[in-house]
Image 1 (cartoon, rainbow, N blue to C red):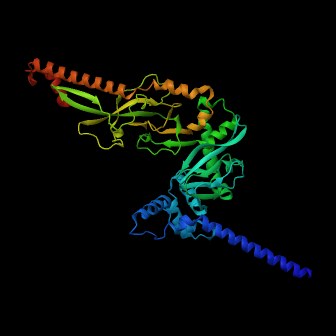
Image 2 (image 1 turned 60 degrees about the horizontal axis):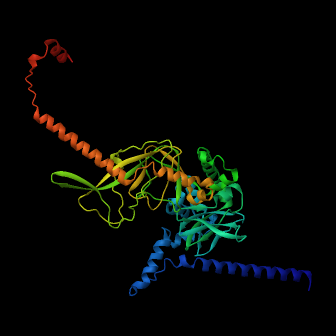
Image 3 (image 1 turned 120 degrees about the vertical axis):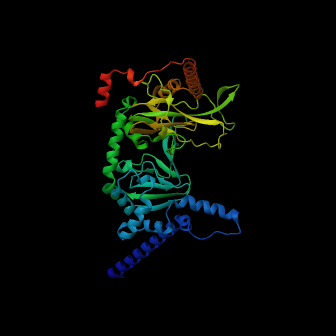
Length: 460
């Protein structure tokens, strides 16, 4: 066999191998994307309701506004997408939660270059220690954040779950920004739909914006004395899991009608001032001509513990403010146990003020209370699991126990409300009584007013 024939044979084998590899890659993509490819198929059986329910629920859960045509366009290379397709993608995904923090031109570029990816349950999206090549935006589903930690008891490395993320969250940007390996492993808890942004596109579109946000987060942490003793590595790792949020005046920061992050967060007030508003459910009735008040508690209410509704305020706030809230705060809270009886009234009370460097924590026991921004507020949100891992001298437990006695319970708020109401009723009653018993004659006429004063009044 001559050299020319050998080279031709090698080239033929290489072409066959490349074709085989492309075919396998195509098959893997088809298998991987089979669930969303079948999402728009008309497979509903009108005679089988039990079969229809999971099919329709999966469609609603996974679609998130993206049709199969949109997903197909997002699988194309950006250079092969037409201007019409890019404009359509911007209208479809430009307003999703994870893109809202960016400017309009940045959102348009992101919609033009991101790729759609689907991962089934139990898939590893990124692995700790690997090199970072992309950033991800979670459209639908839920993922778990895990990290390998060394167990001194068993002397083995184990996976520890740090938290979860849901639709609207994103991850992978910090590794691209600092050019460091992945700091955690991300595993899909359920089937997930994501948008992938490659490293080159990240450097061109998002790097400056993410760097600006990173510096803002570092400046915010520098204002809080608790973080002064942390080293640079710990601060950087904390910034990876934290976020900065800005709230306009009169915005609900935390409460039963505000959108909460997927993980339990601790809020640090970096700038501004906010108030804690209590929703009192009061039963009013008249007995023997006397008006009585009682604190209403629903039979299904599971939050009757006297410590349930206590929140956190700044250490400089020695006294709490007890006053009725302004009209703009008065909005009916969402009641999970249904409507109220007709004799139950809702009263809104401002019970505390949170100033700069103050903190508060969300939770399921945060019921019938809201935190409202009195001024434009900037908050630093740090996951509670992270602070619990770096809880030096058990400081957080001591802070919470101390602050529990600084915020009044619902019962104390109710007692103050009843006391003020009774005082107002007594004052009004005494005023009417005094005015009705004493009649002061008033026979004054215009002729009793000095003439000089009448002239000045007429001139004016």
